[in-house]
Image 1 (cartoon, helix red, strand yellow):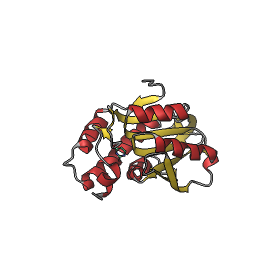
Image 2 (cartoon, protein in one colour):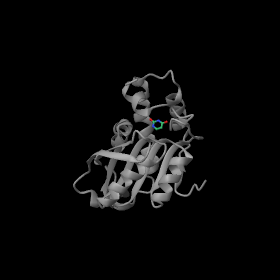
Image 3 (cartoon, protein in one colour):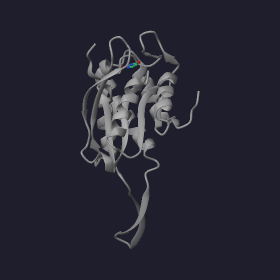
Image 4 (cartoon, protein in one colour):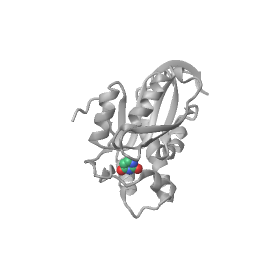
Length: 211
Ligand code: URA
């Protein structure tokens, strides 16, 4: 598959925590905590290219020429509902980020997706966006969310998912070749129920304990 703009993050801490998330015996309290920790590690990697400018800061010793982040501000946009679990970890590293929400779900007949909620920061046009979902499975929800965010006039858009699979990466790549993708694992593919294999089951249920 075309791995252009696909970043599979291989930090050992991230890999270890994802393995714990995969374990069916990991309960929702621990799964939720791991999701936040993994999101924090992923956002660290996904923001490596933020531009810097040099400033002068007076230290107790002398004047230091040092760097601060410059350029457009960031908006974090989780896809409901599993993406919600990633917000806490992401805002821990980017506390000034605004957080939008998009609710998109797969239609029962598996034909297309329905958008049922959208609330984006009013100044989205002045922001670069990181869209977050726990899984990039068929890619249908990801494509619909990015469509909506582009229509709202956002700057660059990145997509971050803990686990992705070739089908989802292909769909996002085909529809939005400009979107950089960050994931912690690229799994084998989808089963007949459209779950990622091996994956970690239903992400929303695992985070919120609904099953
Ligand atoms: N959504 C989930 O929650 N899990 C999958 O494996 C695929 C989509």
